[in-house]
Image (cartoon, rainbow, N blue to C red; front, side, top):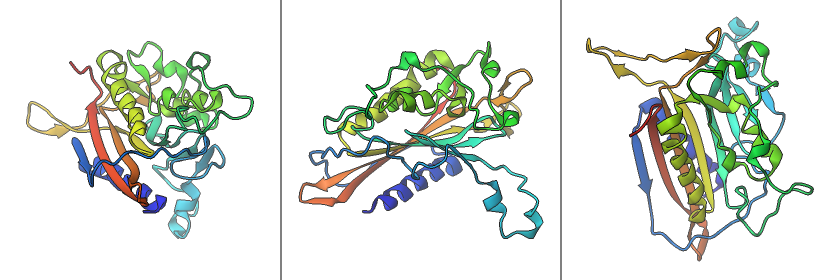
Length: 279
């Protein structure tokens, strides 16, 4: 199966979670053969080749429509391409609409067949700091002050541990365009971290692991029997929205057998967790 087909399947799974509100879906097919480890270049990107850091897609989407010749009213996300991930930034909510990663043993720095770029000895999390993304317009940019005393963690959508290929790649995961407010105790520092670690460990059994992370705003039923979507907005003035849930959509691929390395075995999983302390 061509890699493009694998990505189309992954994107379909992401759409199913966002549009259908799936709670948990796990599927697999074929037997579990001995995994084949495939090293990929450290700078590989999950969705599109690395180009400029930010590409605004508004004008292109308005082309061909006379009524939109002076601009697109939105919502229009900024497509962001980094060294270890690709993301769409939501200017209205001030956090990613989604992020996408392509994990391999090589990208996680665990393959003996690959090495760090020349002059780079790998990544050290202690050297990374949270930073405002200056590639975004100031008016729509999440700011460090927004999170100050908010009661929420600055939650990575793409974890720092997924970007060990270089210090520059890890530093990019600390940009606020990769961050959303998350409950700390019982979620970001616990169950969410467990899911992130599980995604990384899949590279021990699969040659390619694609991970999509999506902040969600799901309805809840109020005492009057009606369903509503309520969420907090942090900052002064209020600017950054707090998602009610977060989703991880995973597509993993490996050769179905040593005799048919071009025929992949595909497994998918989708998980939705509430942005709250999980007992």
